[in-house]
Every structure is written in C-alpha cells, then in structure tokens.
Image (cartoon, rainbow, N blue to C red; front, side):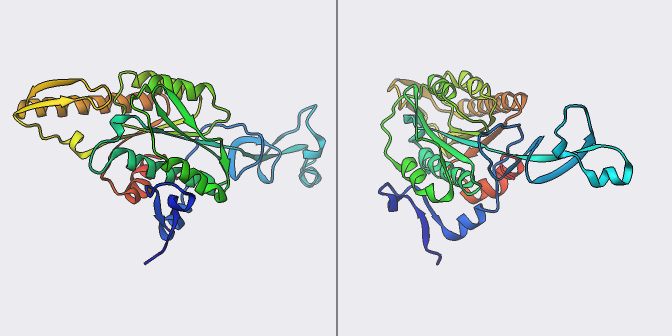
Length: 305
C-alpha cells in the first residue's frame, strides 16, 4: 500500500484532504488549461501566445524601422540579404484561483458536498503549485470571500491543504456578494475555478462578476446524489438548512418528474451562460471518484490538459 503523503493533518488540520503518493504523481502529469492571455510580473513555466523576449524561438517577421537591432538574425541576412526580426514565445506568470462555496447548503449529502469540494479544490490547487503558478484559494460564504495569500511552489502545498481543511463557520451563501468581494481584489489572471452547489438566488450575478475578471472561468457544480435523484415521502416537510424555512409538500411521481425537468433546465442554463463567456460548466455528483473527475471529466471539458 502506498503511504499517504499529502495529508492535511500533518499541518495540524482535519483529515479531509488525504491523497496518496501515486495519485499526486499522476496529478503532476496534468496542467490547468489557460487559454487566455495573461500578463505577469515574473517568468513561470507556462508559454503565452504573446511574442516577446524569452528563451523559445517562435517565428520571423520583416524588419521595421525602430525594431531592436539585437533581435535581427544576421545568419538569415547573410543568405537572403533581407532583414528579419526573430520572434520568441514569451513565458507568462499565471495565477490560479480556486473558490469553494462554504455555505451551510454545501455541508449536506452523502457523500458530503463540502468534503468533496475541499478535496477537489486541494487537487486543483496542487496542479497550480506543481507548475509554479501562483495559487489563490478562497472560501465563499456569508457574503464575503476568505482567502489565503497567493502561494507558489510545491513546497507550499501543506499550507493550502491546512487552509482548505479548517472548520468553516459560514451559514448563508451570499454567493453574489462573496464573488464580488473576491473579484474586486483579484491581482493576477489565469484559471478561476468555482466549486459550488449554486443554491443561492444570486448565482448568476456571482458568475457574471467572476467572468468579468477576464480569468478563465470554470464552474464545478456539485450536487449530492439525493439532490440529483430525490426520493420524496408522500407527506414531507422540506427545510432550507441555511435559513431554516420549511415548506410542506406531497411527494409523488409528478413532483419528482417536475423537479428533474427543472433541474435539467437549470443545468442547461448554467452551461449556456459559461459557454457564452468562454468558460466551462461541469455538473458533478459528490459521489464521483476524484480520479475520474480529474483524469477524465475535466480533461474532456478542457479544464485540465
């Protein structure tokens, strides 16, 4: 058996984040997709579509007055007697943003949605750290974003896991205000992954604010198996576990069918919203194996390369 190596308990936190060495080694073969141009302040491992001064040759273009003479290719001039400027692929500095909805509605289900979200966020953050990106992780809840300072480098992984494993006291989602809070403080662009059940009236406002940061938005829409395929007793009282408000319902096949239809329409609405803004929408059940999510589902959706 492979010994667990990425255990949040080693950093004094809970045991939600437990990955074995084989899993982490497989993760290191992946990379978060970043299809948009990102202008950074220091050189990382990614390659930008920009052309500037760097180490990797890209192409030539004709010389124009005012170009840097140091970029002329004199060997080409000797052969063709024409001046060409060398173009290079410029390295870019990417910030990976991982946001986890920590409201009471996420602390529900079997398996628990928040536990699943913590683990998914930890794995995604690890991808950024391994590839020397800056990684910013935040919890959203009660109308605000609680985030740790951006970190870089694989050696900082236990700090991220400790933060993700800490107990949360948030009750209400307030996802619109929380997303606006985080978006207003963004200091670096790159992949932005929101992990949430989106069970908040302001979910579209939240997505608009996050998409407006010009980061590459991906939404992991996490629902529990019983939310995807509910069984409602004949006489039931449904209680909102954030507000405590309840409603009496009569469970029958018609109610469940209408619920499933509306759920499907909602998921289609979310997928269309993300697609129009160049982002990715992924609906995922909390009982999905994390390996399947990372190595199959997110790769097919181009969230991970």
